[in-house]
Amino acid sequence: MRPLTARGGMQPKWVNGRSSKKVVQGFIKPGDRLTAFERLEIYNRQYWFRLKDCFYEDYAGLCSILGNRRFEQLACAYLAKHPSQSYTLRNLGQHLVPFLEAEPKWILPHRQLALDMARLEWAHVEAFDNEARPSLKFDVPSGVDPVQIRLPLQPHLTLLELRYEVDHFLIELKRGAGLRAEASHARGSDNQRSTSQIKRRLQPETTHLAVHRQADGVFYKRLQPAQYRILVALQTGATLEEACVEMMASGLAAADVGTQIKDWFADWAYLGWFCEPLLKSVDI
Image 1 (cartoon, rainbow, N blue to C red):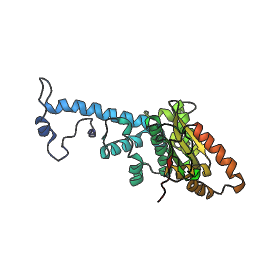
Image 2: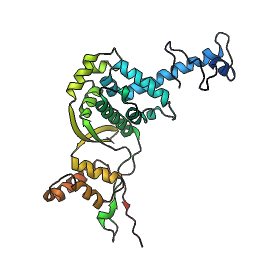
Image 3: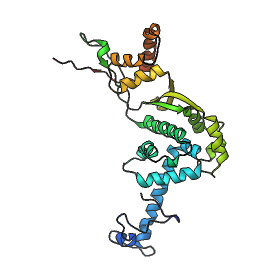
Image 4: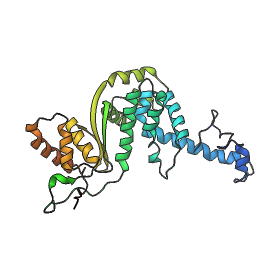
């Protein structure tokens, strides 16, 4: 899992500073044509390239924003600091957003745009194969105040507040429609003109988004600010009553509340966003 040298070989020093050749000789036998070091180097190379391939696949949008050369530098720095610790490579990018927030030098001068894209692409990974619990199908038990019910959201659902409208760009990039020049730079030569074109196209615009899975597909659904507030409140464990109070802070007109909430919840329930409810505990 360790990065290769500039010439594509295994690191000459072990993690503890000792000679890699001497360490490797302690647990790998040499062959007829290869030394112990050379035998392990084959696996180091193939696995490192595999990690980088997965990183490119999961963050093609981020690569398009930064350009191939900058993205290559970012990938090596991130994978060196956060090597794979899971049996599945789907978790490879789970620390990327905190890493970029702590070390923004890798994404300058497009810091916010790159962070938004990284958040969206990780949400896409989560939506693709995270857990799906049984959808909401219940009658409110007698004697329970409906407004005190907690409605958990599906684990695969991610709610995002973004500064840029990166969702449309990423959809087009994945489809390969109309963005072949930018998309080609995911694994091609660096091109500053391409990056500047993306920068001009993605002007700042606050966007609220729900990234979710339905019928084995990943979808991005735009949300109104009030919808985003109520869903975030529910996701953090608020009751329906508490979530509605939080929603009112968005400035929704009081006259519209009843109709709006009914329509929204019907839509979200149809999409299967709600899991079986939890009832708020009552002190006796």
